[in-house]
Image (cartoon, rainbow, N blue to C red; front, side, top):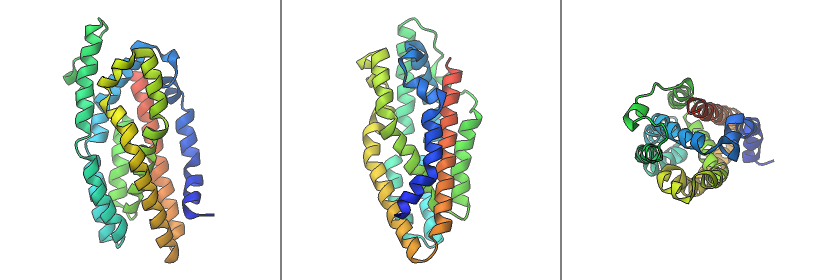
Length: 242
């Protein structure tokens, strides 16, 4: 069995938990209703800023930590990849402005964008941020690539189905107000290929050096924890927007 296949088996349970989560399933189901789905996206964008703004720095710092730890190839790759994640939170802020204006124009109750951005972070957001910090500061900074792999894969896997439901309930014009989601459904196709390629190369190199077992464990733990935190974040956004 290839080492990457062993990783896939290791994170399979966390992936199933994500896809089977009632909140994740609800946002892909017409039963959520137009108003609730629209409100979900408002919360997703407002609270998601805290989970998206630090991404460039997380990847860059993880890459730097990898180089210091002797994982030069992956470290340099992560540092180069970090630039592709710069300022993506600005898409969320712009979407938030448009979604709030759209909701207000339709006569539905909506808070101001500034009020939404000032909402206290739920525990899921704080947990997601802490997972990254722990990986960067810990003995396995290379596990950042597993986090990137799992989270960016969601855009490719769940994103298209979510967009289908969104267009069905809210119309095609809603896509103009969801630039973060629509862009990442496209962008993360390439990103997931990059992530997988880096993981395959890294795992093969570690296997040659007799260190693959511990490395696999660290990758599986980080990828699974990130998925669980993001699953909780989606659930929080659904609950808060109800």
